[in-house]
Structures are given as structure tokens and as C-alpha cells.
Length: 339
Ligand SMILES: NC(=O)C1=CN([C@@H]2O[C@H](COP(=O)(O)OP(=O)(O)OC[C@H]3O[C@@H](n4cnc5c(N)ncnc54)[C@H](OP(=O)(O)O)[C@@H]3O)[C@@H](O)[C@H]2O)[C@@H](O)CC1
Ligand SMILES: Nc1ncnc2c1ncn2[C@@H]1O[C@H](COP(=O)(O)OP(=O)(O)O)[C@@H](O)[C@H]1O
Image (cartoon, rainbow, N blue to C red; front, side, top):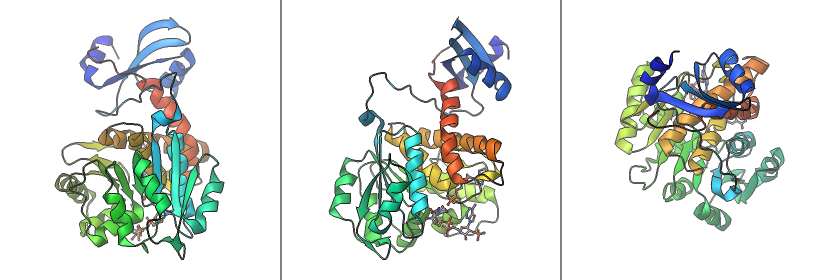
């Protein structure tokens, strides 16, 4: 791409500093169109590329003197007997997306299993009834107060007291509602409209049909309903699937990363961890959802490259988040306004 063409796209470009080796990987490995703005040394080349979609935000650089408290306290609520994996995948993904502190609140029956998956994840064992959450225990109430963002749903099952979800909806922090919590929301007709902070829902088509109480015959109809739902309820909908849609009722982003190898149990739980983490780090909720969907898909693409679409599993996507975040940083470390 010539510089003047690039300038025409200046609104959509992102720039960053990379090394010569990273530049070679980008140009030949990824096929990205990159413009070198300035060569300071072999390890410090200022480059820019045009984003493939409008508005995939750049990652903020981590200040040199940062500490773990600067990157958000994430609380993930979910899991049940038989589905310890889902909440663990979400928690491991949140840590690999940059969160400083990640806690999983889970039924006590599975707490040790969840803690055993990753020593970096903290757990709050909650009193349970046959492996499912029963009431909101005091320990959890304390955690709910100090969290910067709370996600609920992965692996939770639907045998949960409705007040459990209600307690999360009443929080003043941003929340992410996924999986079984979306079904509970649909069943209890709980209100999200009047929440004071961001509400992000991440339904797959089955969950969205239930939420909208409609059988859709075409993806387009479902997407139109998702845009309307988001506008009516004042929330952000991440309608998952091939070319995931992110909408807040007025903006629409369609993702172009990811592949059919991601149609494997737990892939969506990984996304919940990524989006929750980014919100916890202070990104605007819509931006966080767009970035999360894009980066999650890229991680899926890296996993497919390594293991093949048939054999890749959700934990491979977790492991590939590092490569996905690194490549996002390479092209998006800083955004220069008015190039
Ligand atoms: N390792 C673990 O612990 C794992 C735990 N997990 C946990 O399991 C819990 C249940 O989640 P779930 O998604 O499996 O079941 P549910 O919410 O009943 O939805 C299924 C219904 O929706 C329909 N459907 C239509 N389109 C669809 C689409 N594109 N993608 C998917 N479904 C689609 C679908 O139609 P069908 O397949 O019959 O055509 C069916 O009627 C949840 O807590 C989750 O976190 C999983 O993440 C796996 C790994
Ligand atoms: N064919 C596909 N192309 C791109 N992404 C896909 C495809 N199939 C699934 N995915 C992605 O994988 C994830 C699956 O999420 P979900 O259906 O909630 O699975 P689970 O409940 O097992 O975690 C979503 O982010 C979705 O966009």
C-alpha cells in the first residue's frame, strides 16, 4: 500500500513499535499491509497497519510501574458438579488476557477441582445444594463488593435459586452474563434495563432464541432481533457463531477471525473470560467485547494452525491467547490520532 492510500484510511489505522523479526512475521506470515513510519533500530521500528474492520481498539500498553491491582479484580461466578471445566476455562482465559487478579466463585463441591486446574486462579467455595449454588453466602457478598467486573453463567446449570442471579444484576459494577445465566434471565424475566453500569450478554444462537422467545429461521433475522434487544434493554449483545455480531443497539461489529474448529465444548467459556478481563482492565464495554471477539477468534486460528480444526480443543484456545494478544499488540500498541 502506498503512503497516500494509507493516509486515506487514517481513521482506521493503528500503529505500534515492533522489531524487524516481528515485521517480517507480519508481512509474510499474516499478509498484513504494513507501512513503516520510522526505523529507529532493528528492534524498534514504528509501523502502522490498516485495521481490517472499523474500530477494533488497540490494547493499552502496561505502564512500567504497574502493579496487579491496576488490571482489575475479576470475579467469575459459575460451575456446578459435572461442569467444573467451563468456569475454569473462563478463569484461565481471564488471566491470560491481562487481568491482575482472577477469582472463581464456585459451588464448594467443585472448588478444589477448579483450584487444581491453575494455581494462579483464586476460588471462593460457595455453599451448595447437590453441586449447584444455593444461596449467596457471606464470603461471596464480600467478593462481589470489591470486584471491578463480575461474570456469571459458565457451567452453572439452571438449578440455581433465582435470587442468586438477582444479586448479580443488582450490582453497580459492569457484568457479563453467559450460558445458563442467560437461560435463567429468560426464565425469570429479570430486568437488566435499569442497571446503572454496562451489561454484556454473550449468547450462542440457542441461548438467544430462548432469550428472545423466538425460533429464528435465518441468521439475519436473529441478528436484527439482537440489535433490537440490545437497543430496548440498554445492553451489549455478543451473538456468537460464525462471524459473531457485537451490538449495543446502534453499533454493529461483525467478526472475521475464528474458524469451525472452535465449534468445540468450552470455546464460548474462553470468550467469557477474555471479555470480562478486558472490561475489568477499564476498557469501555463495547470496545472490550469487540476486542475480545476478535482476539478470541485469532487465538482459535492459532490453535487450528497448530492442532488442526478437528483435534483442537478449547484449552488449546486458552493456550493460544498469548500469541493472539502478542500479535494484537504488534499492530495496535498505540493509536496516533490525526496521522
Ligand atoms: N467443559 C465444560 O464444563 C463445558 C461446559 N459447558 C456448559 O454447559 C452448559 C450448557 O451449555 P450448552 O451450550 O451445551 O447447552 P444449552 O445452553 O442448553 O444450548 C444448547 C441448545 O442451543 C441450541 N443451539 C442452537 N444454535 C447453537 C449454537 N450455535 N451453539 C450451541 N448451541 C446451539 C442447541 O441446538 P442443537 O445443538 O440441539 O441443534 C441446543 O438446543 C453451559 O453452562 C456451558 O457453560 C459447555 O460450555 C461445554 C463445556
Ligand atoms: N464455525 C465457527 N466459526 C467461527 N467461530 C466459531 C464457530 N463455531 C463456534 N465458534 C465460536 O466458538 C464459541 C462457541 O461458544 P458456545 O457455543 O457458547 O460454546 P460453549 O458453550 O461450548 O463454550 C463462540 O465464540 C463462537 O463464535
